[in-house]
Image 1 (tube, rainbow, N blue to C red):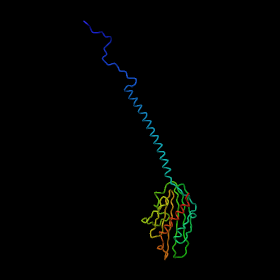
Image 2 (image 1 turned 45 degrees about the vertical axis):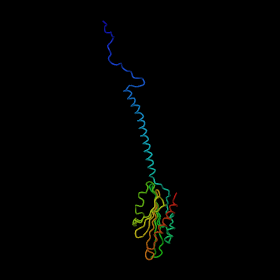
Image 3 (image 1 turned 120 degrees about the horizontal axis):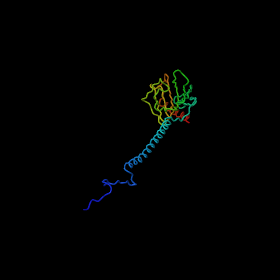
Image 4 (image 1 turned 30 degrees about the vertical axis):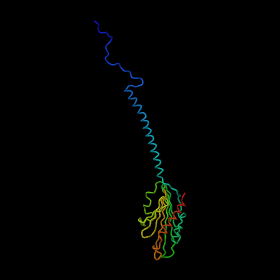
Length: 235
């Protein structure tokens, strides 16, 4: 009778352990290695994005600071009456103007200059004209949002905004306003950080009263004299 073969040792019913291929890491370690390998480039990319964002934000801050500084292409005048020549306005009125008062100020934020002009009194019923000129150089904050919003040099004068007229080709923006009741005109020019203002007013009685004033001619003359002043002060 043939007996059962004798086998040294117990019968191993489990499959032999399968050694991982040297070219393929074990599943658990391979997963962690893959995560580490993927995480490193993402961290590097994130760090690059943060650094680039910081540099970009700094560049924008510098750009905003410099872009907020108004452009000033004009020099400050210590005696504006020596610069102003209302020759064209004088031709429209028939009489010359004389400067009789200059003032000026210099500050870190703004330089300004002012000149008042008038006419000699000839006869009691003569029509008299007066003029005021100011130049403001805003060096820190641009005046664009406030341009033409205030009363200007004559707070008692009431402007007729319904007849406000834009003046093309003069600075960045220019407007010509008329006073109520035909008592004067005001020309304002914005050019970068500079604001130029010229006001001409008149008063009189009799035959030479306000009805005799050619407002259109005076307005055109104001534009020409303003253009001359801006060219004289341009740097």
